[in-house]
Image 1: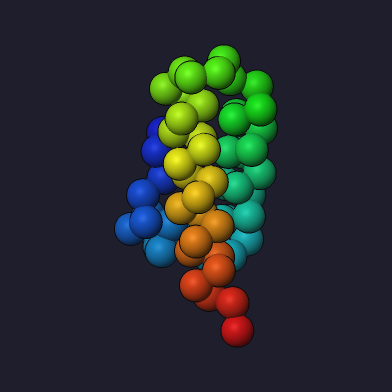
Image 2: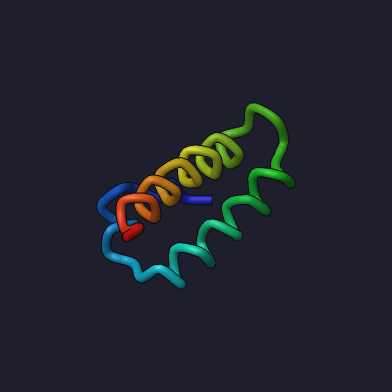
Length: 57
């Protein structure tokens, strides 16, 4: 999985972010521990969650 940056996350809508979050969770759960793919997925999850939190009313 490619790393999702804060800039990329800011350009997406809420539904797109939720879909990407789901994908990142699936990748993180299925990737080998300490692999680059898993690390990217976990970092992306943090970025996506922060972006969603910043949009909460």
